[in-house]
Length: 166
Image (cartoon, rainbow, N blue to C red; front, side, top):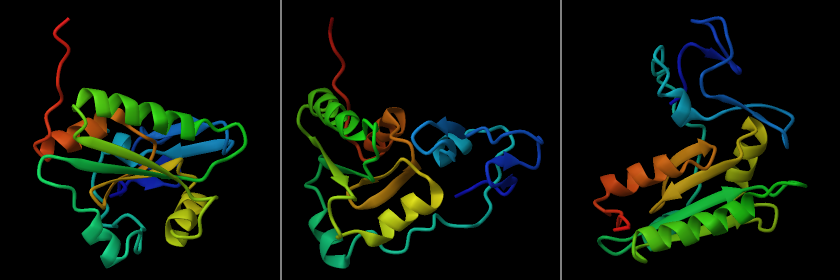
């Protein structure tokens, strides 16, 4: 949920740029990462939910149910000129597959190449978010692709990361 002190990209409480705001060179402006924002010392929930209406139909949600101990991470993004999100998603997929011994599958969905998710594309364009991340069909992030957040959510699901012994 967004912070109740945030107006646009600014914090009314501190009088400065929001703690979660990052400059996005592709969008040529600031974009607020809501997960980073929630770690601000002055963060207070606004009561507003993320403005996502229906990313997945009921049939898709049912098909997104990963077997026990496994997870499906989907990264929705709108490819822009000079944007390397697709490459970042590939790297994320390789990393998570290795670190979680194949129990985590990552799928990148370029919304400019499909008409299947118009609500998500509208959200990304409206908010300037770089991506929407879901895990097993549940929205976990709107903004940036955050590896620490994804790993934290996987741990909450009981999927443990395998640490290198070297």
